[in-house]
Length: 72
Image 1 (cartoon, rainbow, N blue to C red):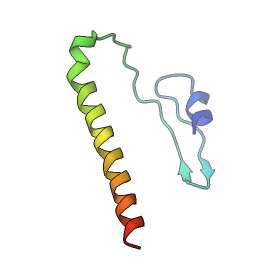
Image 2: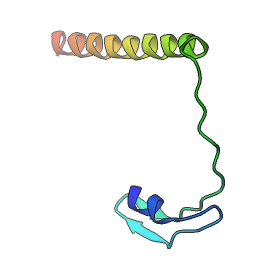
Image 3: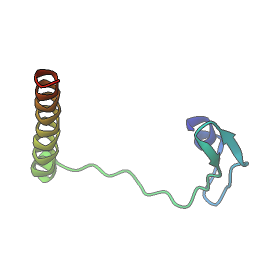
């Protein structure tokens, strides 16, 4: 996919139709937003929430794996 995306050169450009094992793709560059730099304090709560969710999902997956292994 990345080769399709990076072959487009400007806003409004459309890629050729591309067929891959995952499906058929047509990519259009719709807009470009300027990069923005945010302070750590402004994103801290969001980062903490994402990390808690990641750890929770990891622990749940490990627990599920252990339970399944124990009772199979």
